[in-house]
Length: 171
Image (cartoon, rainbow, N blue to C red; front, side, top):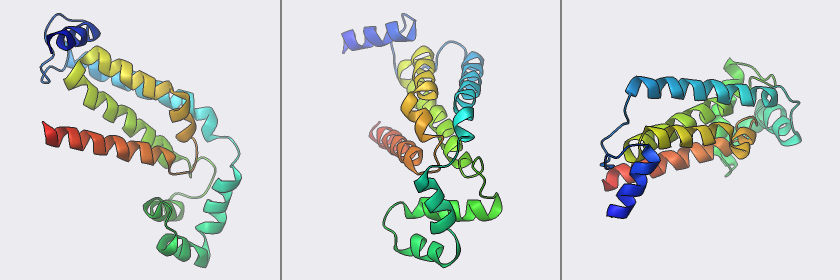
């Protein structure tokens, strides 16, 4: 345990033991870092938001979630029914342009970056939290998933949320 604690202190950049309650040296600086990471994440993802739609995105948006087929897709499809329901409402309110149908995935990616930072900082320190959030912000897989009108990034988001909830329950 002592070796692990020392190693985690090195990752944090301090000589203080990691006790699970420390949030780093400067809370305000951490907030600025998270905002910079969010801006970086958006900048990295912007080109992908404007790409033309893939066949499966077109099918789900214009065929699956339109008219009578939407009812069938939402009620009978066993694959991601909550995502289908959310996208059905989203398309009716916001629209179905290439960018509009990808915005929910972008929002999920930004929430994921914040969740990772929020979970790591109290456990491993501000430096590890910033590094973890930075990795999520520029990870090629996370960038790819968050620029598609699909449920992939939502799966990662809710899995992360589940792990965080389980961790909190066990503490």
